[in-house]
Length: 447
Image (cartoon, rainbow, N blue to C red; front, side):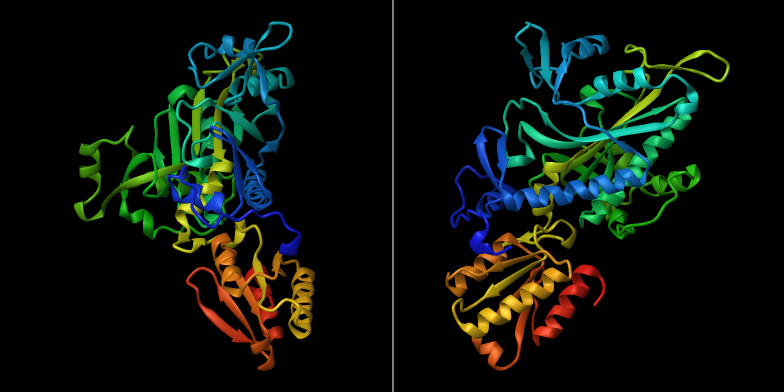
């Protein structure tokens, strides 16, 4: 993409209303624009990041055998009354009426709707287990929306719902999502610590939330320092093997980690030596629940069992804040100059900088590099504007693409270009051919 044709409204100054670094940088980098309190438009740069995050989430859900669906944002109040949550949920639920005076709501979550869908579609135990998920916009009327998309009213969420015949099978489904979340966040360069959590208005018996450490986090967290030494890289697991999945979960849950709602000082001091006790602030990016028949029983979601009896299914729900992740990654990966995107979620992998637009040799070299990188499948943002060099460097550092490829008349006379790695700022000069090979290898994993 040529920057001269792209829509990226950069802000040089930090907006006064932006309190945390992710909100500041997303506004300055032209990723989002506020439309009203807690509601944002996603501009091209931000939308590209959002779609990359969404795709990683989708791939890891598919890997577990979960099946994607799409449910509406507007729901009937009738199902929520059956589950008992319509009046209990609180003012965060946006309640509306249609022209027929029927009570409707803008869905904050989908337990009731997916349970009703499953109730109508599955009748026999032979059709179990199943896990259905969708990636859809949600609305919760936060009392005090703040921190940009971190605590907005409208947000993109992945929510999955498992259905099993027995509690034991339901626990396996829960564990599969636990592992899938570890894989998902690790692919984005995040160390998301699973912590015991309160079930809140969702309900249920078991719950873990996945948090990344950040000074701006809203939750106090307490955990064992041994989490830092664990393998956070993508790992393989056979999701059909109950023992294999449970082993991975056990490696994480055997160590102490809890948010302030579930923290027990006595247990913490007993289980973790003083030298290894860690505390801080955390940002929640995922939450999983197992709630047995909390929703299936009142909504009549039953199947015929092996001996003909009617059995209420065991279910769980599993959420990931897809839009929140864009901000969370920035909170975890930035410096004083701007964002530092991990390769997997970067809107573009390479920023190509033409230091002298209008110079025939420089223009030709940039055009050649741009074509070769695009042909290799690398997403390039080519700064072909006539802005001064200092401004171009500042913009590229602000938007945080993993690599910058700098081309200017002086370097070309010596037969070299410059490659800068955004994380750490290392710079190397090399031939144009070597630069292409280096970037293709770094992005694609092969020369």
